[in-house]
Length: 170
Image (cartoon, rainbow, N blue to C red; front, side):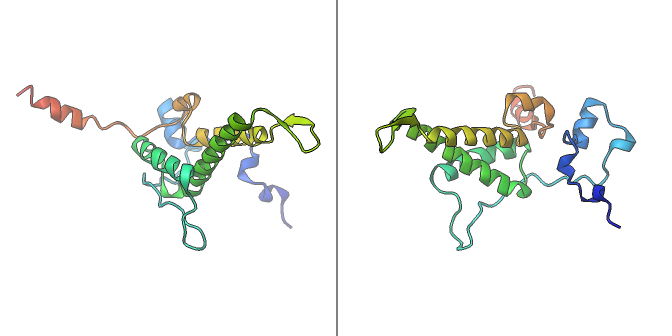
């Protein structure tokens, strides 16, 4: 007989589990709480996704956001190939948010409908929905001030600075 608890999704447990590295940094790790099989993907910028026809999925503002954010995430050690779809979704939502904002600026917050009635601009809902989903994705990639302390980014490589300073202290 199948137990209903076996069917529960991991996301239904409540608060998300902390990564082992974060537990170690905070000093709260215990052998019973460490996942020995926790994945540790290599830091690497994924390939830009393509559609079923082989054409690009990201164009215009979405592609510009991809080109802007991926090197930053790589430098911080916060990106891997497995993040491709989440990152593509972030870039598409970012472009849609910008487009919605432009439409609101162009048309105003109140628009006149066919019958002469006035209503809120429908782009406001698009903008609000994009902002909400972008916030969740930004937290996943540690892109907000409130998430900086929750994640362990790749340590900065100070060896380059030391090498350039060594020439002055021979």
